[in-house]
Length: 551
Ligand SMILES: NC(=O)C1=CN([C@@H]2O[C@H](COP(=O)(O)OP(=O)(O)OC[C@H]3O[C@@H](n4cnc5c(N)ncnc54)[C@H](O)[C@@H]3O)[C@@H](O)[C@H]2O)C=CC1
Ligand SMILES: CCCCCC(=O)O
Image 1 (cartoon, rainbow, N blue to C red):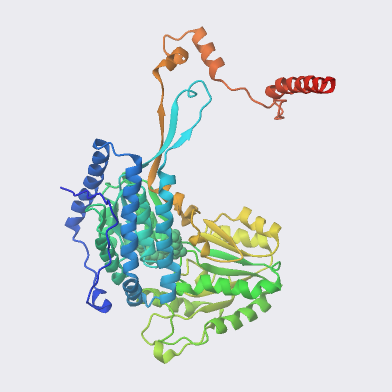
Image 2: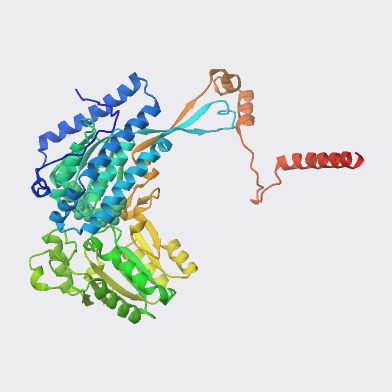
């Protein structure tokens, strides 16, 4: 029997453990036995159905459901907050993740988003009244309702292993769903901490279950055909696998994928903005060791300023990264494969390589590639073939903007993000109009993902669906119309019933067909209501004037 312990109060999840943080974090990730996966899915579906049944039987008000979901999220909030140090330690162990990046790019966003969702839920969950002035609906009660989807599957990547696992979980809970989460196996310490956080949240059994594992376990999940939605974040390659599996059972998906996001640095950017622009580009391109899906993947610099920009970029690179050794707070690449792929490409690039200084001896055996600029890079370079999930920034010279956009659309169309550094609004709008991207920033990079209530998602090969604020709530609910029609309305609506007649058809058409306000040339006609009201208004004014003058 699934306990549906309604969270009447926010249970304290702070746990005083004498064990050191070191001992709690574990690099060993026990994969969920394949046979358990079907059981977990069944339990998740049972939980959801039982919850809905209880809500219905107890005729629970919407206000109760809102408060219940808010309390669940408050428990999750404190469980995450209580594990702050463990989370930081776990990611340090997983890929030497910079403490500052964990806090500023991941941890704070997750907590702030949870608070935003909790405070927004009453608004998001309230039914929206719709007015229909046509004879069909004018006396009906019409509302738009967001209902839960059911049981959802969330699949997370490694690069923001906490945020991209738990933020979709938070949205799924806000939508009233039960959840199965599959964290990335590439960050085992973080995957273990996620399991600890869910346990400490003391959520009702069955609400959130975690399946630990990799491709095999995930394949079983996506092919189960048991989910009401799959929310996948990861590479386009695997995204296609997920979409194909989901299609077999018509399971809707959100695919948050990657791509090569271009950055335009045009001749119309004031030189006074160059240093700030380059620092922001480096921030977006090199943070998390370049393992950010929306990172500026390559830089397009107009030929007239190329040499000066490269000179300043080189200077700033060395200022921001004076010397990297084993003690430097600099995130590593996730694994040997990623490191090898990157170093092989560095050996095969035709570009001139400029790298931040490193203490080579202290970095032996570490998956650390320093921030690297590729000067005089061309479109067929080894780093221009696919997404660079590493701190490598190709800098490509261009002359003609439209020809450059043509190349982007030929080789790397519909990127997840596009960045424009220009002070010419016409040029900015030209680029935005021609190049479709998931999201766009002008004058900065990557921080658009942190803005509440804005949609975050891809287009074309960078994914479909989105989340963020109300978009996240919508991603995990179904919006439906609830139309309550009074029975007496058949006085006017019975003409719709057979046996049909000319009279019924004519009456129905007269009663329901709207008239256009424009003529056949597309020009707006003088509106009838103006033709009636204006003369009446004029008469009223003249009568009042006469009365005023005579008094
Ligand atoms: N749009 C977005 O919000 C984001 C997109 N990404 C993208 O994710 C990628 C990096 O993350 P990764 O973890 O390397 O992605 P990935 O696609 O390798 O793995 C993502 C998830 O899919 C599972 N998986 C891997 N191979 C699979 C297979 N053959 N069959 C079934 N499941 C499989 C993994 O266990 C993991 O949980 C990059 O392409 C990046 O652009 C990363 C973060 C955010
Ligand atoms: C919520 C969105 C986070 C984006 C993480 C990334 O760009 O890899």
